[in-house]
Image (tube, rainbow, N blue to C red; front, side, top):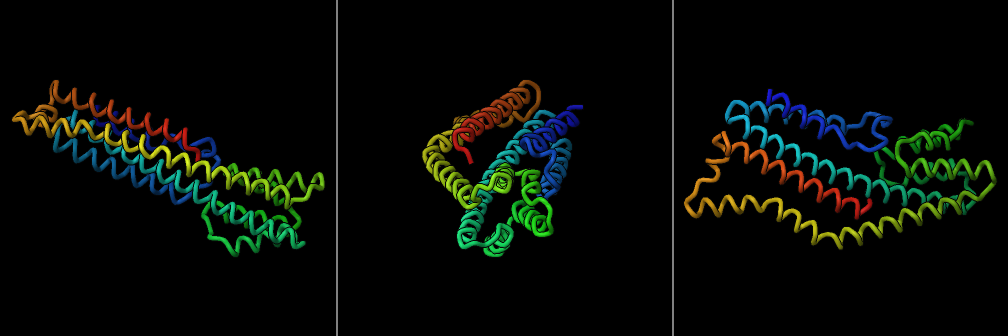
Length: 258
């Protein structure tokens, strides 16, 4: 029973926190990573269930789940930053071609050919360009996309077509906004390096306590992994430590938009 509850809790944590667009987002290779993580977690929990007691198994699941969650959050933030930079480059090339009198579709084709492909940005932009070239609504493809920046570009494109506003001016404003947001995010992340280091130190500080106790002749590891009250203390301690790390990371993440 404890084994099943531990796995279910870990699965909820790993599969949750996908953001508002997760339900409408098409399948990506990242979903395979989540499945692999769940399988790896199941194997880890099975080994721990056989080798150690239930308390140590639960503590191991908490640590593994927290570590995967942190790596996933870090990867997602890096992906958002990369996508913003690529979209800013795409918009810059589009604006330059629009100033030269090129149509939006041709400007998009040129920009796509001269920017690094992205698995989420490029297919949607290519579909929008093809749709517009064939007489359909390119802006509607972008508006229906899962990425907020693509939705904004779609609304700007649609507004330009509907009201006759020069699209190059709207694209320039959007590119400037993305660039300003990136500069602000970089400066904020640089300022938060100290608090992030402090959070990591506080997270691993209990390990220093265990080493100190062992050096003094005590046996804290044996107590915590021996079941009973020690095992309960292990689960509570690891749970509180993991919760503190997650909350701290969330606070720092909210102060550093990406």
